Image 1 (cartoon, rainbow, N blue to C red):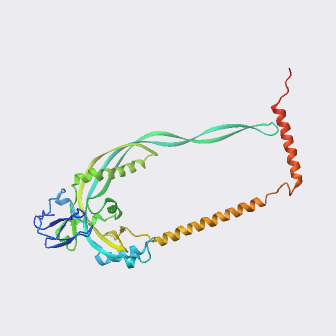
Image 2: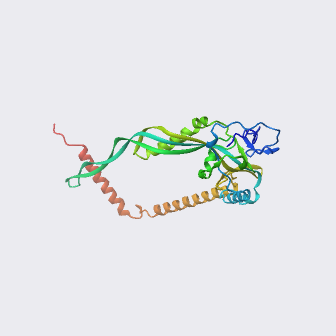
Image 3: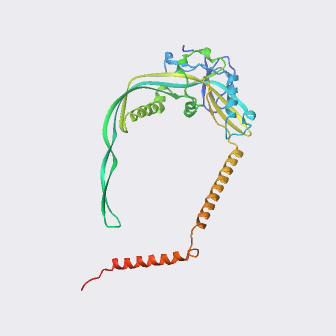
Length: 348
């Protein structure tokens, strides 16, 4: 990308703080993140980015505006818990196609790790039992147990991550739109700005690595090391080779109104993947809760009836008089036996 000292203007939204670049012939602008409209005065050129020009790129939009809007309506209509008329009644208030800045990190990593692996062993347990006739029986069984043994190893791999550098798009929103086909990236040229805005990164590449890039790569390395052992204990990795890029990725941003509330939706401008906020229908939630309560009442009633039927089927002493006599005889025998065992005869 040339330095473009006279080819690009910048705009910083006073409402949300997002900074974007756009065609210098533009005189009015609407912030794609919050919808703020402003009349523009001549502005200075965009600052020089922290990534060299040859390492910057743009992934072009592949989803046209009309197609994106149709996909949005389809997405709104698929929400089970949302109102049935959401797709037809949602009034789109803000529509913007914007290139959102992301820093890309690709690292060749060497890692050392320590862990433990498990082996199952068996031990013999012996138990002695005595039956009613006084006969002794010895029984044995094999009982498994686990022993952990230390191990260590190495791992080499290549890992990549994207860190969103936008003021108006959160990292969570950006992650929800992944993946992008980065092989489709083209050199950063001003002709891609036609019909779209391009946001400038809100921090340099070094801060992107410190704030999120290192942590995201570390999570991938840890997961790879953990997959090589039964129980990961320690790991340490170093970078053998690294590259940094600044990529502008295509994102459609929508704000729509349903009833008295506004909601935001973002869409991958290359694949059409959608993520965002949809209202929940109180009626559907109420019906679901009522259905659960009815099912609980039916289940409780069925269990109560079954318990009552089982209790009514039990025989009683009144129905079978001989059982009361038999029970008394058994109790008498137990009491006699207990008295004899507990009170041995002692010779003075």
